[in-house]
Length: 389
Image 1: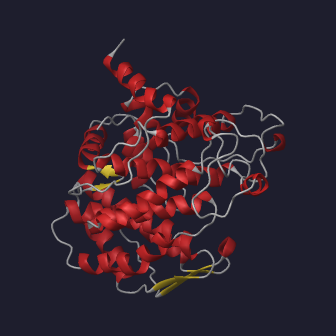
Image 2 (image 1 turned 60 degrees about the vertical axis):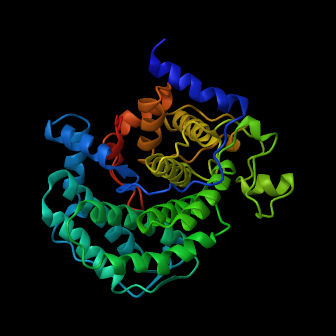
C-alpha cells in the first residue's frame, strides 16, 4: 500500500471511531501571510502551471483574465450605506459591492500570477474607494451581504498586503473591515446554514488579515458548531445536531428547519431539500474555512469537519450528476444547480489525502474551469485544481 493511501486511511480511522474533533482554540501563534484561502506555495504552483500552458490551469487563467472582473478599466461604485433586502429588494449597492470585491480579488490573483503591477494597483483602487466611503450595511440581508463581500475583500486585501510593495491606505481598509464588517459577522444571524457559514468564512479571513486571534477563535467556534449542524452524519444520532442557542429542541422543529426532510442520510445538508444552489454556498464556505485553517497550521480535513465535507460533496454530486432522487429524499424532487463549489474540498481530500471521491471527481472535472458564482466563489479551478501545495 502506498504511503499516500496509508495516510488517507489513517486520517479516516479517528473519524470512523468518533475520536477526533477540532480543538476549541484555533489561532496560530503567528498568522501565515498570505493565508486566506490561498498560500504563496499554492500560487507559485499555479503560476508555474500557467506559464507552462498546462491544463486545466491555463484555461482557468484565460477564463479569469477574460472576465469583466479583470478589466483594468473597471471603476469602483462605492456607497456609504449598502442596503440589501430579501430577494435583492431593495438592492442599493449590494451587487456593486460584491462585484467590486470579486474584482479586487481577481486583480490580486492576476497581479501575483503576472507580476504586472497594474493589476495590484487596480485592486488597491477598488479597495481604497470602498474604504473611503462605506459606513454600514442595512436591511434584512445585511448579515449575508457582509459575508459575501467580506469573504472576497479579505482574500484581495491579504494578497495585496502580503505580496505588493506599497499600499498607503491599507490601514484605512483594515479599519473598514474591523468596524463595518467584523461586528456584524461575529454577531451571527440565526438564519439558514449558508448565511452563517459564509459569515464565518468572512470573519475568519478578516481576522487573518488583521492578525486578530480573538476574533479568529470566535469565528472558528461558530464555524465548528455550524458545520456540525449543517451536514448530517450517522454518528450524530437519529436527528441532526443543532447549533447551541438555536432554540431547536424538538423533532418537529428540527425537521422543519431541515426543509421538512424527516429522513436523515449521510451527507444530507440542512438545505439540500431547499435547493442545491444554496447548499453549494454552504459547502463552499465549509471548504474555504478549512483551507484557510490548514494554511494557518490547523488541518481540519482529518477531523469530523473533513468527513462532513467529504460526505456532503459526494452526496450532492451524485444527484447533481443525474441519479434520481428516492421518494424519501425531498419527496423525490430535487432542485439542482450546485455551482462551481467543489474544487477546494475535492483537492484537499482527494489530491492531498488520496481519498477516492468518484462522484465528486466526475462533477468537478466536468465543470472545469470553474468560474465564479458572482457572489463570493471565484476561480477555484485556477487556484486549487490538483494543487498539492
